[in-house]
Image (cartoon, rainbow, N blue to C red; front, side, top):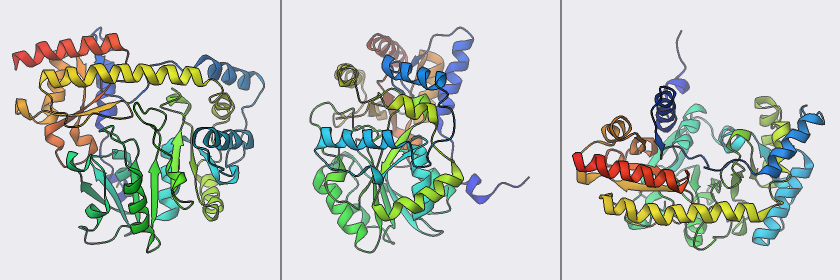
Length: 383
């Protein structure tokens, strides 16, 4: 059976393959410290779980409105009003099957064969793969600590073709850096000058540790923002996200959503109605992530990893491994087998510096992170 060009163009998601291998080792009795997967190290808050149970008991298990239940869309609009002081119409908010579902809908609606998507390298791998799946072209643009890992207009001007679409994460994955407002505004002005579009992935916007940046929605009504419940709300398995789009995109995206997903998951939506109601729980998780970051960054530097800038958000650290002269695939393979620590190779995030970098997640609890770093220290001393 012959695979389509789209399917052949999808590259492996190494972090998920590594997670599956680590779990297989655990099933055989081995103790693995997980620093690979970007999944919150907290259970879903109790109030959300209770609402999910009530949804099942009350038979809220049927298809919902294809754009999401109106109550949740209003709750999300209220969230922006309280956090950012913005008046966002619920009519512009589309609830989706995770942020991946939002990306698939947006890429399918905005990109044709031969259109160019520009993303940063390093950057989140699924952007490239979803764009390949809709038969678009992708420019992975090298960025470094010299620009604080920001993708800038200066980078885009070096491309042979002006991109039709630019996607950036803010805060970023894998570096945890935060974009400046002026960088996002300049990207928007440059790309939309010829009818292009800019998408800002703000899935980690609730996990910022020093100074909270404004949502990109405060900069222009035509900027598209996606966000979701997986990270800051510890709801990865609920597979629920949202996007805020210009009014003229709502109906086309709704038609796509009706055909691809029918509707977002009903139980997850009713559970998420309570997600914003206990900010103290969300703040407690955020502060614990900050504590973990403040432990991990100096500890990894002491071990010899090159970390040129401190991560400001998300729960990732992008570290250079030049000191040991190993390719990142060999490095993470040996770390798993010999130190029993799971880390993600740089190849997941692009080609630029991929062999000389690895990503650490500090989503797990502090005790496990201490254990993992101690294991790495013993292992690295033997290399």
